[in-house]
Image 1: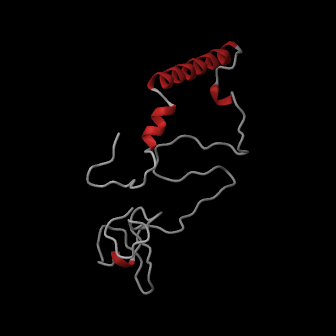
Image 2: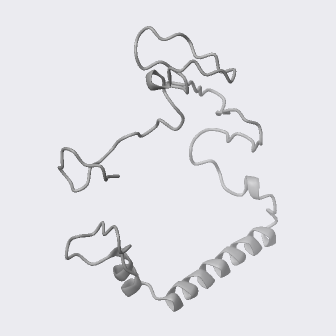
Image 3: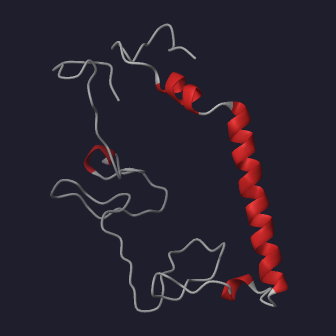
Length: 139
């Protein structure tokens, strides 16, 4: 596997990760390992049934020290009893002083350059090549 002909992000003489991985794990070894894991999983399920404990929800004790929350398709955050969750920084929250509250009704007040946007949990630009001050390419 080689890099894209236009953008070569590995300009060093180091080996590509794919060549290292291919040397360590062949397709045959991967399939053999996968088959072993599948057989082990099937065997452990049969042992649970044979031992009379077919209810998998009680098969293992909770190692985290709290009761798990039930599965749900609801669009809300659910945490275990005794825990709480709160939003720290949400869509529309102002990032400069003097901006009105976000109405969240579909209207656009034109202040998106002064508000938090979607998926703002890790915004950064790392210029390429590393250390360049005025780069238009980066991560």
